[in-house]
Image (spheres, protein in one colour):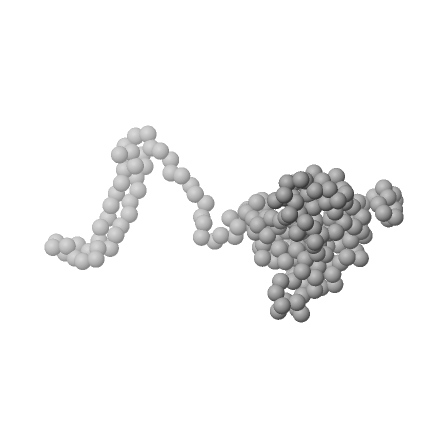
Length: 232
Ligand SMILES: [Zn+2]
């Protein structure tokens, strides 16, 4: 496949293609994330994580089939608007921060507020069509060692964009099988439950319990001993 002069014919891994296409648009602003792989703590930069993620080759068709990106893409690619005044006004406003590079839709993410302007450089995020967002988040989640969403979102945000990324990232632990299972196993207060057998006749199953009384009875007793026949 040839996209705007980049020959990807010999590239078996489509992942590389998307990354090559956007390389010139990358920001060099790096955030470091510590993750645990095996027994070692390894400092992973956003770039390290990005290199490990397999990104499918997003095509124009993917964007044009995406409910959110299709209007922006269609406008940028063909100068075509929908004819609906409200939608088109929104598209024109949004389109200022988007551009297409080798079929990929890129969003320019600008730091908010004056304070941030000095601290944070602008980032060029690859827009991810909705059908690919789950697999990309899942990969981030696994590379970061089943992190909580707090670490996941800033890291994924430096490279990718889709509208519900923050919500999706915050939900990922709840949807991840490994996270859910390890939460149950790591809870030390939870003992396994053993339901009691149901007796079939009197005196088959008897339990007892005791209680220290808060004050002496008139007979001088201080404790209560209770027997229960589970058949009754
Ligand atoms: Zn997980």
